[in-house]
Picture 1 (spheres, rainbow, N blue to C red):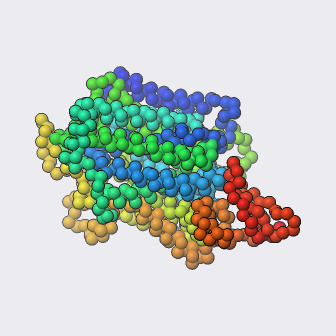
Picture 2 (cartoon, helix red, strand yellow):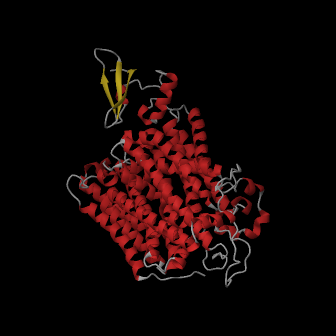
Picture 3 (spheres, helix red, strand yellow):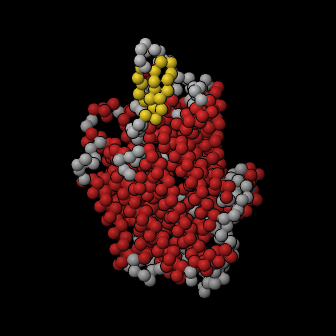
Length: 620
């Protein structure tokens, strides 16, 4: 049974203010003209690569934190402890890998869609294999991000579920379709600030209510919620230091290196160095928001330490804990509940807008432009209009995606990260093959991706049929000893990580040994399993099918060149094409040397300067 509370006037004022400002930013960029007028698809999709690092950093942080952070992270700490805060170290490793490998590669190729790179490296078959999986992932992810927070908030605030979903989709569609990437970035900046302020308000007000952060920390420690130092190497344990460090690094590297929604942002920066600066500034912003969210989880546990609202049937699942906390103890202050809802919806708006902008870019760059021949004959205005219409269609489709997500239940953090690991893990494997292994070819990438995806789906689906046992999930105990009136006398903690845990709990004795040893693998390991199997199979198949010949050096990550030159000095890392004219990448220029010499100087450069010059033999 859910507890419903209706907004007060000031709550509506704060919430509507968020929606109006978000829409106004989109309208501002839609009607802005002059030098920055959006007259080309490049301006609409990547802002002509003229956005500075600071707004991009906040936009990156906002895009994949979302309402899942505002609602899901505190619930995660309440149920499983503050181990989730260790993702701060994971994110640092992710930013380092992204800056060293992928930003230099993508930025120097001057591309809009990351999957255009796969087409140059492995061909169209691999490109569309990966693009289809990316679109499938974004559909599922946007559905979860839209539905889960709307459901939780509607059940404790009184806002109708489908009204909130439709309202969210319409506002996102408006400012994304009209304002393009600049509107998305600047609304993300505004919405991240609202998210941080709302969480900070809950933290401060909750601390005052309980009696200070010191008391909150002691209560959390006594309740087993302060559990940083868990170094158990067992991969079946849901969260340990190693699970988060290894599994989380693979998962978030896939998001920052291969997901169009993130890559599209740092490709909109003014320069490669600005893009690198943006991802590290983004890391700082993510840590701040995550820390506040986890502390809110400790506040929540301190408030409900002796009267768990799930056991007493006050709410139906852990995703409703944070909204319940707000309306029960903070609703006395006018506007606080509205600010919290605004923060949650800020996360939802930023994620949806990023997603529909990325999907519009992928559809234009990977489907329409290479397949539809008349595209090149269209005016810039018509091309931009088509891009806007696509963004509008994807935005409205979000409503339907939320309906699909309504079939899912359980912990929204685990659901989103599990889907990301299953689908994005193989995608990361393909990009790793392309960027770091010059001998890999399209056949190897195609087979490797198929094997990696199949393996990850096998484990992920099997884990839903045979959910991990309590000894691996380590759901922490809660109490009802301090409740005045109990609506339930259940003494066993409720497993909220999966709906199927409840359905199959009566069949635990029928679990096969593979379910205990393999299907119980932590959901964070889905991504490394999928990625590494993709790379391994891809290399084996590439070796047996002849590898790659006449490879364009610019399609390999610059760090590979750097390492090879350091180790082997002037030796070639792979065969250079016999005829230099075969090079067709825009960031490569070739000039004959003086006289009738049969050698050329290849100048590797970006938009600012020549990075390196190499002499190679060639036919002129």
